[in-house]
Image 1 (tube, rainbow, N blue to C red):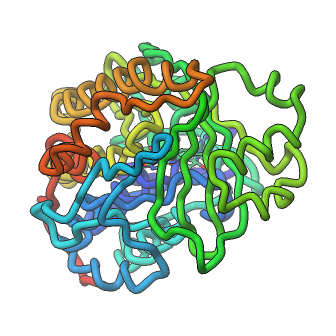
Image 2 (tube, protein in one colour):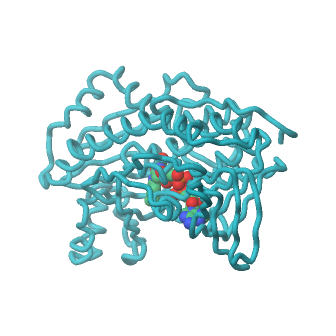
Image 3 (cartoon, rainbow, N blue to C red):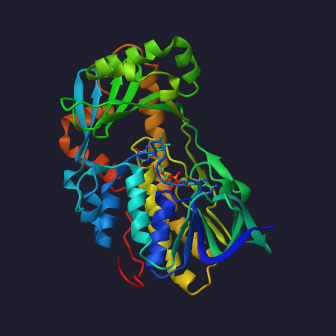
Length: 411
Ligand SMILES: Cc1cc2nc3c(=O)[nH]c(=O)nc-3n(C[C@H](O)[C@H](O)[C@H](O)COP(=O)(O)OP(=O)(O)OC[C@H]3O[C@@H](n4cnc5c(N)ncnc54)[C@H](O)[C@@H]3O)c2cc1C
């Protein structure tokens, strides 16, 4: 029995990049949308701060690029990898056919706050925080809404369409019984932070060193550090002790040696269990999955946010019309999967290849290697090749464009 019931045209479970972008675009097109987000705010742990050129281009198409870039961020026109004594630029975004030719590093909560602020200017947009979706409602084999837990009690939302954008541990996809295809991942990532000094390098970078892979992301006054480890090896690292862990950090990034004491305990080190998976079918009558809920991405290339946003744009382009006509069919939902499935599959295939051919061997190699892995050697000696990873990471396959109409007042 529900304590509260409401009806909307589209109910979106999850206010991450996919859910907020879809909610914004549908509300802008005149659709009544309710986004249910389980957290009270967007101020959560690090989940990636990258805004890719393709997402920045969408902001340009919406006329909001300058306003977004007025928020604090760092621009990275290049991505670098250091391997032993080699310093290699692996991606150069400066040739992309976009208005912003760089990755903008901005805290994800700032991006989500920005999208929420823009969306709230449209009368059809409703964001309900502290509402955790726990189940889907069905009638005659069709999903007709969701049930959510709120501080005030049980909320039931009925909708012509439910969209699962509740991330890689999606409760909706689990409750709806979707079949998940797992692709496997040989590694996990440990995330932690240390202070950043003005004299430190500026660019984000990856470092391969003696069986270790580190990622360093400039977040202004701190470094967001990721250490890639062989899957399941976190317990062994903990047993070896925190001082060993700190020494590893200092060896791989010597300029951080005076700050490793800031890692005070294992509570400061967060384990991201990497998983790469996808749904065989992204939809059921009345229900569509997008973003990580449809396909959890590997951290390779840092493209998860980008793909989630691209799914949202494609879904809005294809579904705004049927939603406004109050008639969304499984065929409409299938068109979203058909549009986004092959870019997702090819991206995951490339990620799995890099995981297995580059990262896994590098993690097993305890001694420093004087030779660069072939892909790094190629981009070092033929700089024009840096445009290929730049295109794949910065724009992705099949970049989407805003095609939804605008209804109501523009913010
Ligand atoms: C540590 C870490 C680092 C990452 N680094 C990067 C990076 O550098 N670049 C990059 O592109 N990607 C990165 N990613 C991946 C990226 O965060 C995801 O691919 C992206 O956020 C997916 O967007 P999404 O909207 O599909 O899902 P999510 O961002 O996971 O959003 C899901 C939302 O749903 C909410 N939610 C969950 N369950 C429920 C429920 N039952 N009811 C209501 N709400 C719910 C969550 O609170 C969340 O707000 C990283 C991920 C992690 C964990």
